[in-house]
Image (tube, rainbow, N blue to C red; front, side, top):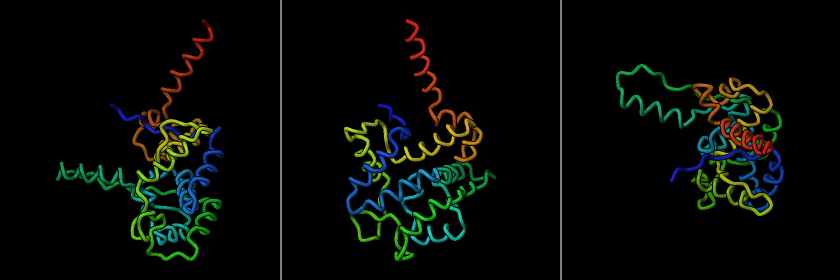
Length: 212
């Protein structure tokens, strides 16, 4: 059975989703909301955020931007080099993303009085020696999505990056702009990522249905 791709959080549900996430998170509300806002604001994959340390965030704040070696591209490059030892393909560059003042204030407040060596987003199962897993965070978001008043399908940790991408496209209507922001190799990849073909099919069905 094919795994269904993650869906972005619709703007019509965004505020309620965010507030419900905070409500169900209990003592972990600050952690869960900070991950949520950081991912929505930067579009990094969840796997590239959950293992950040307090020191990583402090450095990013000092520089005014994050510079993260994205694991998906890096692992693909390592696999390529292993299979093609003579390849001259260069290691992918780190993805850079500026920190806007609103996000900066959230992060400064979050890391205050925390130790540099700590994981910024610790697991509930450990004493700061482990970070929350991608699956654990996806399960939290899914719990919110399954709420009767929200009721969204195919919401995972990757939905936050999808939401970031969708917002960029809806604001600019420029696929090349979104491609560059996400670091995709081609506009076609970005088009599939945004699910634009699915949108066209759904819209076409509605238009045709109205003509019956």
